[in-house]
Length: 316
Image (cartoon, rainbow, N blue to C red):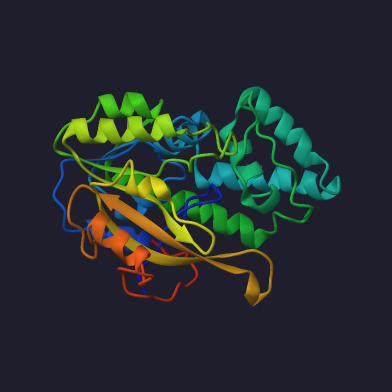
């Protein structure tokens, strides 16, 4: 079973269960620098472990956190002390302290509070209002920071710190358009943009114009690239795959999202990797369109079991 290194920050849509599939499709590709215009939690880069990387995001809190881990102003010991201290206050106030921390974070943007909120907010969501304020409510578990969870989070900080130390990584808080302007032909770009139509539930909204601009910038750079998106679910097909990205190859994997405890609430989605190069299990865009029209399976990768992410030591 492959080791999966999980970041200390949580977010809906995190690619933890897909990172092994993504890694297997890029492991034999030659490039000088790994680039992510939408770093998010960083789970893909931290598991691919490129020697050199440019990791960018429009969310300053993510970038500040990883810069802090990189320059050692944030360590596992510091994180442990903070979570124990704030966790005790959370328990003593029956959860009300969460909102004091949220207010403080929205005032000063402290990275330690960012970790605290990420691990005690409702459903591990990362959502900001139009003013840039974190606005996710409490998870209603005052005893959230038990010793086992604190240990798990501090181990995650240690693992990510070791991975960052191993490589030549640059973290930048900037719009994806700026990142596109910094690309060169020997880069490899991994893009995981927000879904079109989801407004300010992450940090920025995303529009059709943004999607078209992203595609144009990637093509103009002459860099190799892959892009994560969804292809279809039982309700509809992502038509942007066959319009904006119509000249790309497609690799797909079936992924299940769970809503509630019942088996009937398992929602299958075909996740897609779009690329301007041939990947291990990719097919052409037109072939995928034919499969959909003919109601043939859209799966191009082999079916695998998903195991819980491991908390393992990293030997460098």
